Structures are given as structure tokens and as C-alpha cells.
Image 1: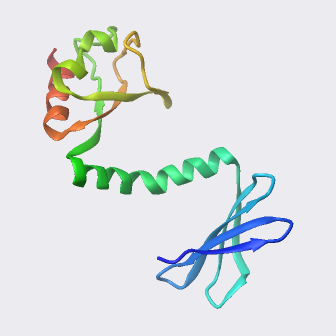
Image 2: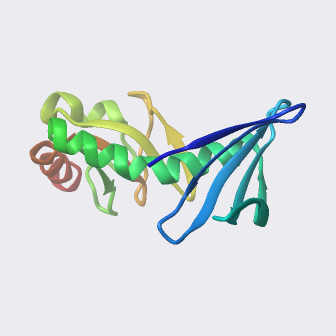
Image 3: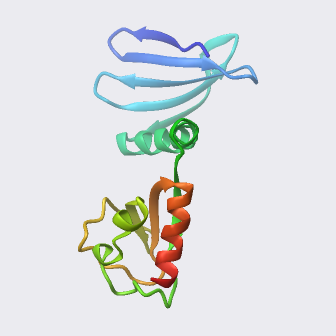
Length: 156
């Protein structure tokens, strides 16, 4: 897919492409770092039909949402590595215990890259991170390793 880059003198740059439906979808990045998601008509790139200003955090989140599934898919195809969210159910032997207590990486070759608790993400948890029932562990590994990790979390 072709991305057209247009300098906007004194403002910044515009980068856009034409979707299959004929809309121009793009991003305007200003010299002061502001980002704006735009949608224009295919035949008139200056005719903006939608404009959404984004903070740096919002634009990074949108990029992650749009890019993560493709990245994970390519990673799995090329290496056999995938991600899975594993719940820590009530009654798990690791409720109230630490990540280090699970020895997940040693036992299953799976890494815990984040823990989601009550809507809050705890990235890169350390071995002393204490689990509670209801935590959702974001894990990375092979399908076989992830299956073993789920078993470890359920039964020890």
C-alpha cells in the first residue's frame, strides 16, 4: 500500500493512503508534536470529512491497537511464539504468592509480560510481584509452553 507524504510548510507533515473504500486516511504530525487522525475524500485530499486530534499517549495506544495483532500473527508464523492471557482463578495455588514462586519461565519457557488487575496494567512484573485471584497474566511463549503454564497456574 502506498503512503503519500506531504510536507506542510510551517506546520509539519501529512502522511496518508487511500483505503479500499476510496477514503484517504492519514495522520498530520505538527512540528510541536501534535497528532491528528484525518479522513478525506479520495479525489480531494484537502477535503477533510473527519478530524480527530490525539494526544501522544492516544496516538501510541491507537498504533498499538492497530499494529499488535499483525505483529503477533507474524511472530507466531515465523517463530512459533504467541501470546495468551491466562487468568489466575480463585483457588489457584498461586493466589497470594509471587511470580517467582510459580517458576513459570523455568518450568514452561513462558514469560509473563504484564498483569492486568482491576483494569490496571502492571507491565514487566518482577519476581516479587504478588498475584491475587482475578489477575489476568499476559504471557508469551510457544503454544505448548502456554498450555503448560495454564496448567501450572490452575494446579501448581
